[in-house]
Amino acid sequence: MPRGPSRPEPAQCPPDEVRTTTPSVPRAGTPQVSGGGRWSRWVQPRRAGPAAPGRARREGSGAAPAMLRGLARAAAQRYGAPRPRGCGSGAGVPVHQVDLRSDTVTKPGPAMRRAMAEAVVGDDDYGEDPTVRELQEKAAKLLGVERTLFVPTNTMANLISVMGHCQRRGSQLLLGQECHLHVYEQGGVAQIAGVHSHPLPDLPHGTLDLADLERMVTRGLGSPYHPVCELICLENTHSSSGGRVLPIDYLHQVHRLARSYGVRVHLDGARLMNAAVALRVSPARIVEHCDSVSLCFSKGLGAPVGALVGGPKDFIEGAWRLRKALGGGMRQAGVLAAAALVGLADAEEVLLRDHQNAQRFARGLQELASPICSVDVAAVETNVVMVTVDGLAPEELCRRLRAVSAAEVAQTGRAVRVLLFPWSERSVRAVWHRDVSAQDTELALRKWQERPSYITPPPPCLLGPFLPTLGAKPSSKAPAAASAGPLLPARAICSELGS
Image 1: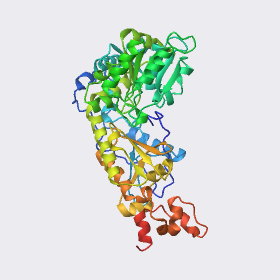
Image 2: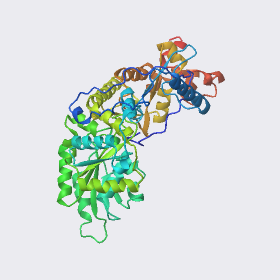
Image 3: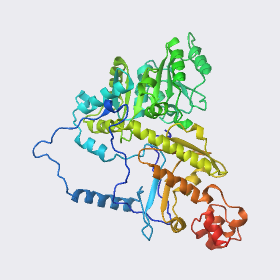
Image 4: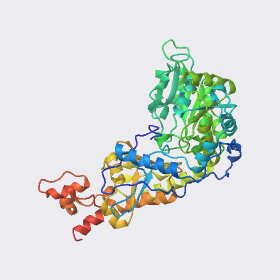
């Protein structure tokens, strides 16, 4: 979720006509570590040495995995848990799910799981975990900073950064009114750090007006009434603006303005690697205009957990103490750092593919020329597509694209479920990630195209007794049986009417 809420609630499978079962084979096309890319030499993870005698892994035994799969199926049946790759009508037609709610929904692939299992670990709270140290050293080189610190989440990374820069209670923080730190992190800077955040209007590109920024920075100087600004926070890429990339020249102007008044700049770089790929520059080229940075590993980089804070040596030493105070100190965290190293190793290749798939989807949706759904193709700069919805509630659009009907299976020979995130009262968000392939992108477009009743409702004169099936209020004259019918696409409705 935006970035929205970082971890949206799982979408519950609707009581569709097509029931789901779980495929027993792994999904084809999951990207593996390629070792390529301009940044890979900094981030290739080291492997653990040979296992000690008596500790060798048992290969070829399928009993334990089979038992775990059986337990998972039993739990899903008992508690009604959604099965994301579920599939199967009475005829056994598989349901293929394309999950575009967020890039936080990724699952570790085989290479990442293997690296986690084989990671060399130690007590990171004592600074003794070699895999965590490796990640921190390689990330520091990648970002062009003196030091980095591994933390559980990017929310904690942002909070630690604010606390490190704003050490006086009542200090002022300037940021965008729609940025993640202000909207989706529970006001932690006020709750915990005692920092007063002052939001400024976001411009369409995710930037802040420089004149407004300077006016607010200078207002507290020498004033006994106004809070004193100590920090400016920027977000790159900017989630609420649809993954827009902040121009490097703009970052330079903000940093120069801040330094002229003794103010520091923190960059919320949860999707910093997406920005670097879009700009075709190294991440360090972006970070050089900031005093501290955060980077999330559990979004486009595909790790299950983890983030880091980057900055000068003395700043990171203070960040270590703050991490401890916030409960973020971890012990054998190398199993998590190993996943982050794998995610970084193929980041350039994977994120570029995500961007291309998002742009392909945006162009395809524009070509449909729907009067209800529209997209600004020029605004799709990274892996996020914001779809404007008119004449239909975004939640209803999401529900319909998530549903799989018997009519769809009969007409197309397949069942596809597309998950989107209802972003606002007039928009839905789709986010591409390493678990969504080019083929998935085409399937999502076909779902949109093949079910025009979702996007372009047929003329009312053609609907008659089928109005209830399209979510409209039933007429008092409509047959009672109509409301129980399946959700039919427009072409199926025309067929039923003999047109």
